[in-house]
Image (spheres, rainbow, N blue to C red):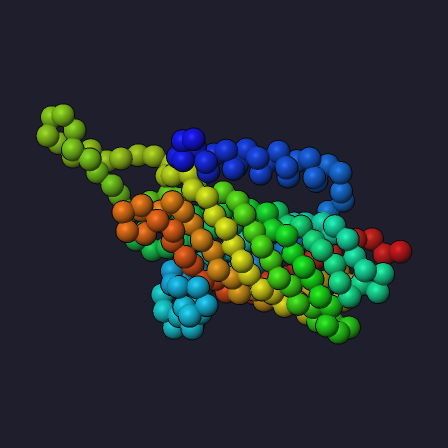
Length: 204
């Protein structure tokens, strides 16, 4: 199997699964989150999110509910997300991913979530690149970047403002690869985002 084609294959599978699934179920929510993404080891790099470089990370998502306990304390969700990360001097990243989410309601307004995500990431160089042509002159390389795979593990908390709106806080670990096979095959990020979620469910 050609490993370079894996991200493209993953994107095709993702799009087919997304289209088929969303055609069968009604969307239950939409969300917007924004925050920081730092290249660092998972978990131990968490403090750097608040004192190191700022790499903007914005995500827009939607999703539906797979199942929900009668008392609504436990439920399983699936989300579909598109994002943007700007890593200064390195890359612009556009992640497109789906997540399986376990949501635990811990009070009338609070809920805890555990997320496992997989998807596609388009990596676009953030600096000009040049190559030497046959005439011995450096030419600028113009392209739309590289297709990459990605995985994301995260934990979230939500606070319900009313029947329609909830505030969210999300800490995650995002893995991008293959990045540079010779020394950094997988590039890890620690991410922290704050956001707002709107319910699309109609009152009964």
